[in-house]
Length: 423
Ligand SMILES: [Zn+2]
Image 1 (cartoon, rainbow, N blue to C red):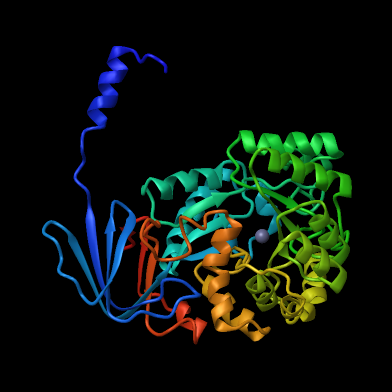
Image 2 (tube, rainbow, N blue to C red):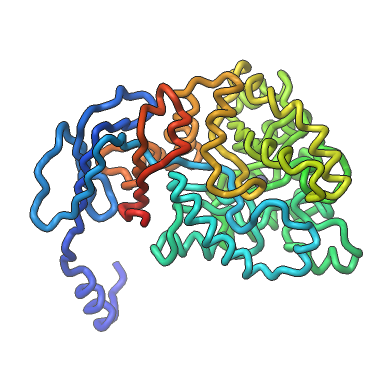
């Protein structure tokens, strides 16, 4: 055991002095602890120091000194999880703003969007790509309660091929170079280095753009852009650091190659076919369908929001977007909830549920995809995604039963994250 200098030891002792526990008691007319449990009736949930300590039948007495929240007519459900958001951006921004807006502006936009997202009932989000340290700053801000917002699991800048989706394109060569995040890579060795760099700089997860993308200015299709060797290198390196990899992927062969390389989640997955689905199923690769992204960009067509190259790509994916998740579901690919908020207005995240049900998921499955299943994807299934003693007090209140009609989650009346009530 290390010997502590006396001054430090004294300091540790003083901070270890007992702090009065903060207890909050919630009375509600129903509780849905998780997607697999039968709804409970009138209940009392007790929260101490940010954690659920008990859920009991009926409205229990409130102990002295405890705060009390009375939610008559409401049902408590676990806070929702969105595995794909971009808090630091709003939809419809001209691509050249990348050359005129500093990264710091993203933190301001992100603070606004974090609050919107929380009030929509999302108590945990995975930040799927942002400029440099902006998402990490937000992550700290919500964790420490400096700003209101969900718990943030952040990727930071995505790894991309040079000039591909996630890197910079559409400017003069010298401008492209200046604007690049520094996370593009070529070859297995450099890609491994960039994955380590992302980890060093604070990434909780590694985001890569495995194929071309719809909203970037590059017009090189939607198929695989990284080589198999590069993707395997990124996956192996990330896993050796205890990090998962999320891969933006549209084209079928790009999806299949990413899953085969050991990537953990496929974001979008638009052109998934049976061969790609088979590899995903065998490897346990999750699909994060982001159906709201397709809806959002389609709503913006023909309004002069997008450049011609982007308009063409949006039109090309519009029909497939209506059916691909349903196919993946029938092929038994594991599916978890993610929206790509930022491509459409933040706060509309829960509209994704209706789109999932529209493609053949049951209400219960859709609810699970944003709670227990999403928690499992984040390897946080012992912390979030259900209401149980010992879990983080991430709780929302709604009217109605999301197991029978998941769209009741579009209207959230009350939100608590890590034991803190959103105002
Ligand atoms: Zn995205």
